[in-house]
Image 1 (cartoon, rainbow, N blue to C red):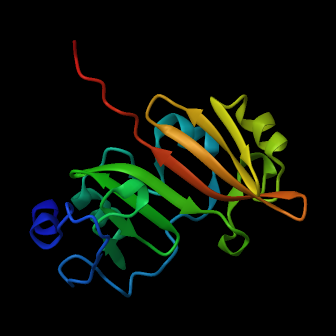
Image 2: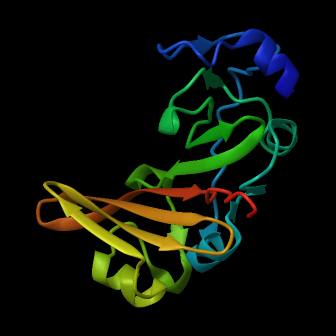
Length: 179
């Protein structure tokens, strides 16, 4: 899969380009991939969700989720990206580095301990513990948790004085060179 991807995609071009080759994409694969009750502590500790885990190669991702409906030469974090109905996957080389999925109201996302996307940021902290980093800005904020297999970031938007979690991102940590 990766060799075919490289033969069809110019990842060095500064402009993002949509890849439409039927060798790489399946425009009919539009079923939500991240469903059921999500255990965020497990996401944080294992760096995995819905059959994918950080570090998988492109062929393994396609074997699990099928060919994506859309591929971009670079999108999420300026990485070559597979886009599914409810998730975006970023690859560093042939390795899955970023998994970002939407949790908006129309996604019917469920979480452990009865949490919903409408839970306050403080309620999320009560369940997950103190974050590694907490940022707030104009109309949103984020909580970041570092785990052994990756970093999990929860993205929030503020609507009418209420919090709403709109996305979760898992990112593989940078591999430090051996000294």
